[in-house]
Image (cartoon, rainbow, N blue to C red):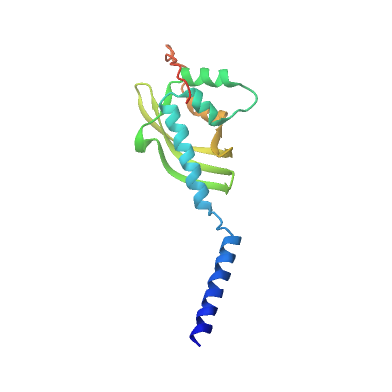
Length: 161
C-alpha cells in the first residue's frame, strides 16, 4: 500500500511539474508598469545629467525633426528634471500592454535660478528592443516651456561605452 501511495505521489509531482513548465507564468500589469516607471526614471536621470546623446537613444523620433534639432533644444533649454524624490512623483498607469504603457506622473522640473515647478504630465512609453522609450515631442515640450537660454550650455562630448 505504501508503494502505491509513493508511486502515485511521484507521478502527480511529474504531472504538476510538466504543466507548470508548459505554461510559464504570465507577467502582471504591475510588472510592466514597474518596468516602464523605471525606464522613465532612467530617461529623466539622463536628462538631468545632461547626457543628451544617450537620452536621444531613449526616445522615439517623430520624423518631423531629427537628432540635431532634439540636441539643440535640450542644450539650450532652461529646464531640467529635479533631483531625487522631487523628480518623479504620483505615478499612475492609464494604459498597460507588454510593449506600451501610458503613465501619468507629477514631474518636478528645475528652472535655472527659479526653483522647482511641478506639473502633471502624460508619458507614452514604448518598449523597443528591450528599452523603454518616450516620444521626442514629450521631452521637448517639457524642456521648452520657458524658452531658450541666453548663453547655451557647454556641450561636453562623451564617448559611449
